[in-house]
Image 1 (cartoon, each protein chain N blue to C red):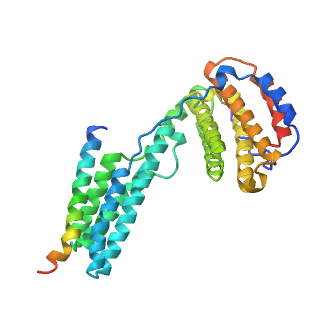
Image 2 (image 1 turned 60 degrees about the vertical axis):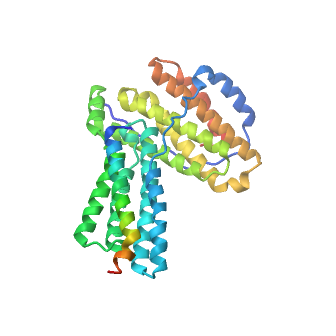
Image 3 (image 1 turned 90 degrees about the horizontal axis):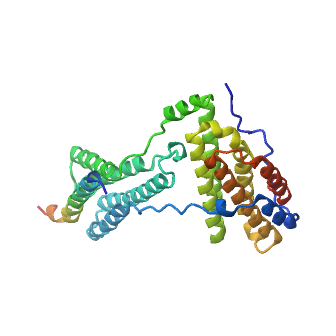
Length: 32
Length: 312
């Protein structure tokens, strides 16, 4: 795996992680 | 300048016949085989795209939460995003597999830009999650989409593009017209893809494996021709007769396989595949050794044999 792939994979997982967190907690923030 | 004809005027129809099986042994002995029959080891590839499939599965949790609180827009956006992430994973896997199988030879590449499609699918998935489920604004959703799509392209790369200039230069050196060479080779690649498509419909694992091997051999020959277009004249019959014949006979067999199973016709089909494998191996050997082996005589024998077996 090249450095580019690793960097891309880290970025991809970070972004999808953020989106997962936002989608999972949307109901909580909707309360306020 | 010489030109190459791809022989499209040849008889297209073909059928399997029950006679002529005894002739096969005689022909195969005359053709020989030996070391040249050894197939190159199957190319291995690492399955890619699994990360996207795992990501798709993780979004089941927010999807369930959306269902629980009765938010149809959120649920629909998440469902679509999951489907897109999964499809993206599949597309990456297919794109990477084809690249490895084709060993980077550009003419052999599929016309579908799988990895680019995957990046687009993943970008759209991120856009949908951001807009539909996380309730971000359009601008933020677009930003997520572009970043995620870009990250996918960075991870898996984009599809290789056909480098026609290199092939045209090789053709010019051989005294041929570049466009003719490309057309001939592209036509041959289409035939190999058609054989693969037909083979996918077969029920027998053994036949599938054999056709996989045959397609591998065919691609090796086409790679040799792509690198040395001056050898095209020596592979004319391979390009015209055997690829067409194999494609037709496999397609027909795949269509009628239920009725043909355990009949002499099924055995005939196997014999035809034996013959095709031998001829392809011989062809590969002739191109590789770059000598004037008397392939023409052997091909004459095999052509008669194939006619008897019903390929033509």
